[in-house]
Length: 388
Ligand SMILES: [Zn+2]
Ligand SMILES: [Zn+2]
Image (tube, rainbow, N blue to C red; front, side):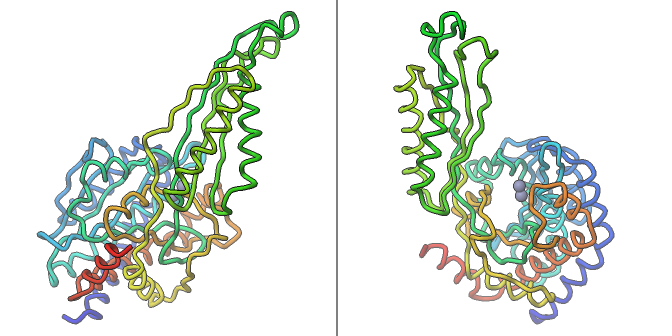
């Protein structure tokens, strides 16, 4: 069967799953679960794949809500990544229900391609994207060791074959001072909150002199007990982000200097820890992106190149992309003025535009699976990956 016929068959398969996929997406949307607690969502997605002939392993890489579902034999092994965690209070405001369901829809549609061309299609159920970095655990545990290429499609307000993402490290900082009556004996106290405010001021000054695409932002999680007690303890969490690991390392030093300087100035002792879960920058494979782009355009969608003015975040897909050739694409489900991580975007993730985005993402991924399995294509993808 020629490739165009294979692609047509894959598109028809996605279309024939429409009702089930939309229902699955709405079920996940109506039952938002936080990272690493996505019991219902991961079970529904895994069961759907199992019912469609996939071999499913649940609870991989030490994560109860991660799974791997495989169809076919041996290499090449192409991974489609499912996310399904929600945000606190605003539910599926990042639209991960669409990511999860488009991956399973594409995987089922890829079965006829695998039957014809060989290899395997693997759905990786990757929990806890929002801040917990589930994929970082999975990469470390070797879940992607035998994967040849990986794709994920995130809902957005634009169709893009790639999306950049910043490397990101998390700093937890605490100052320890000395309590005293704030009016009676203020001269006996050491003010841990003042130390924190000095550190914030230092970071604010630093921000003026860093690269435009880097980001430093944080919150105070403890600022004292009562206004009439000199705060003996303060705590903050900061995120430091940069486009590459080298600049991230430099920024981390400079941010830490703001905290050590504040410690010296205030006399409050500093304790800090960089969380061991660092989100890597996204390394998009442009050969793979070119194939995905053509397929998305063939569905009648206008596809835009990534532009940093659209906004830059971080994703644990970055860590996957450093291990295997990958793309992090986006599919438009809402108009431009709708912001991601808002109740309006959560509504879009359950709208008709959301359902259509889900179906098109699944079709474009399945069609790209057919492209990857053409002779010589995977070599080109891997050559690019090794060159960079
Ligand atoms: Zn998000
Ligand atoms: Zn997201």
